[in-house]
Amino acid sequence: MNTRIGLIAANTFREAVRDRVLYNLIAFALLMSGAAVLVGQISIDIERLVVVNLGLTAVSLFGTVIAIFIGIGLVSKEIDKRTLYTVLSRPVRRWEFIVGKFFGLAGTLAVNTFFMAVGVFAALLYVAHHFQASDGWVLVALYFIVLEFLIITAIALLFSSFSSPLMAAVFAFSLFVIGSFSEDLRGFAAMAHGPGRWLALAAAYLVPNLSALNVISSVAHQQAVSGRLILYNTAYALTYSALALCGAVLIFERRNLK
Amino acid sequence: MSASQRVAAVAGSTLIACLLASIILLRQIDGMRSAATIQEVLYISSPKLLKRLSLGYNGLLADIYWTRAVQYFGGKHHEGARHYELLAPLLDITTQLDPHLSVAYEFGSNFLAPPPPNGAGQPERAIQLVEFGIRNNPNDWRLYYDLGFIYYMNLQEYSKAAAAFLQGSRVPNAHPFLKVLAAQMAEHAGEIQTARLMWLTTYQTARDPSIRANAVAHLRALQVDQDVTALEALVNLYREKSGRLPASFQAMEQAGFLRSLPVDPLGQTYALEANGQVVVRDPDDLPFIRKGVPQGYVPPARPKFLPND
Image 1: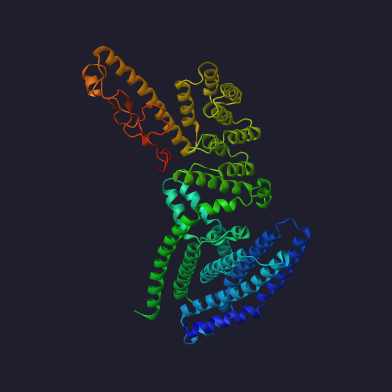
Image 2 (image 1 turned 60 degrees about the horizontal axis):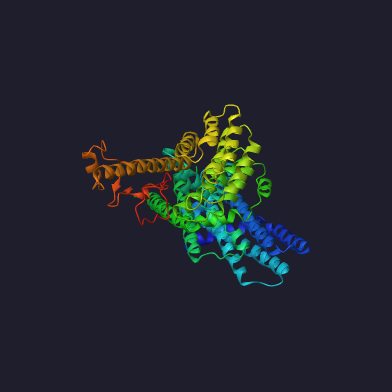
């Protein structure tokens, strides 16, 4: 990786840690330990199911909130504090700044997810007393969640490059909700007729397909995830993130910062 | 070209390439996950729980489940499936989330009740669904029609069908055909004209395109059944008068038995077999026919009647 991008990414990571982003881990740890103890006491033969569902859903939601609320401020905060001018007055290109910010936040989220994953497995061990081979699919679900974070981070950065933090948050969150129902959106499009069908199809393919990245329910039921789906989801998440990042670079390159 | 322009050009072309690649990848992923979504949906199979989880947005959730039910049936039917285990639960969830979504009851009566491959072969579940609809929408005459339709078409219980039509005819603004149908049930149940009237009413009153397409396919089949009966009667008449079977329809036309070459509802001429049997030329395009089927014909796994066909 370009050294300048690496430096910006490292600074973004440090800044996130300084902003006490990782404090969410305390809330997560409390949630998971509380759930594990409670589920262990209820004991209705679905302890494992509840822990996996609750744990993975919490990982996804905590990370999404962080990705959106940190991502939307990545550019605007630097402009408000006027630190952006200092950075860009150095031999740093605008695109490098955007890409560096992306990797910085993605790294923060990956570290955050790692600790939360440790929490999920600890709770799982507490309620089930041992691991099973099918618990490996939980790792795949976590991997998909990280891929989801990449897309959301890139989208938040895209909106952050041209709008106010409030509007960027609204746009990014809306796209997250729509993306979570993207398979249904394509279902609606398939049922539409005439020009509406093409418009709906275009919209359905333009929004991020986050529903395919959500395999929480199936891994909670110990169902396998196909290798092809892992491969295609990886390719899709990287492609879509690159797409949003390119949009952010294009806008930021032309933005008047005076 | 300045450095900034170069960056813009590279970013722009990468953006377009990524957009195209993401669409291609998405289509691949959709192909892999078409069934997975529905399976996952039914991990929560309790409509009551779903209603609570929807936080009051149960209308929107019902629409989503309705779309999934249609997609599920359409997808499975397209593959030529003979089992539709999830259709009934999907429709149950849809209607319990929104008991006023009358098109879901209509869909259920048309595709839940008929035997596979054209339906799930669950007339009892279809009756439960429509009766639930009637309890929640007692003034919707279409639901009484749907109920009578299931009793008539799938269970051949004509008295129950007549009762449903009669009950529906008493609803304000009911379709006048309901009274006629109730009377027909009493006198002419099982006759081809009654069946035609039923499918015609379905075609005229249904809102879902796949239900209308299904009705058209059945109307065509009834026409073929009627045509073949009439044509075979003429072939017999020809044999009685000339002492042999006609070699072709042209021969019958020349002998004055026919005014023109007979054609099926899709415009294809009927074929006359050497044994005097009248058959359609392309039975794949005419599912549901009972007469005019060529000997040894094996119907395709996937019947043709949906709009996508």
